[in-house]
Image (tube, rainbow, N blue to C red):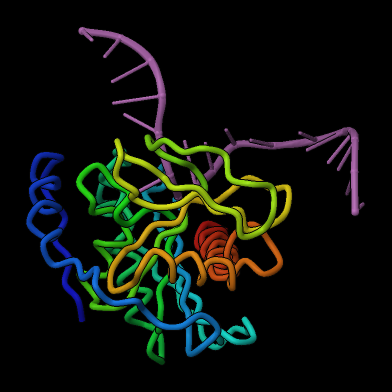
Length: 225
DNA sequence: GCGACAG
DNA sequence: ATCTTGTCGC
């Protein structure tokens, strides 16, 4: 069981990120695409009712069939602040992950890992706390710069913070907007992109994210009525 | 100081 | 993230 302490404020949250970033492991390639299990996590909110619901959905990486799923409901404990998303999402996400009956395998989350002002986005934070291999697949480029990748599935360009490649803009389907892939923990960038392509076989977003998104939304509606 | 800014 | 109808396209 992983414990999580919510920081008292933004300054403390940034200090936590600076302290934990030294524990990120970047020299492992990560699991091969199409093998083992892969788990998507996502969160839905109702700020008015102070409600947060996280979902974790585990798929067979070869078939993309659902193997297991879980949800966790909680209270909103941190506001949305760009750069501090992890503190808002992690408590519920950790609870959902811990409720899974089997090993999650590779974890895919909405948002960034290394592509972060302090190189410690949600995917990196989740990886350090759980020890699991994690990648981040975001729908927006945040503050980073990139050139438009080619039009075909698989085309990509570097996502840049200055002249440092912190992730990639990756086209997962012909003629759709790219997604933004970055390494979280215990995974390489080439492999993170290969994993993303394997999971985004039929749609722009990885199947893991689509399943987790649908599940946490349904669970939130259920919790409201 | 102002704007931009993963979800 | 979330508030939200119809509508264009495969």
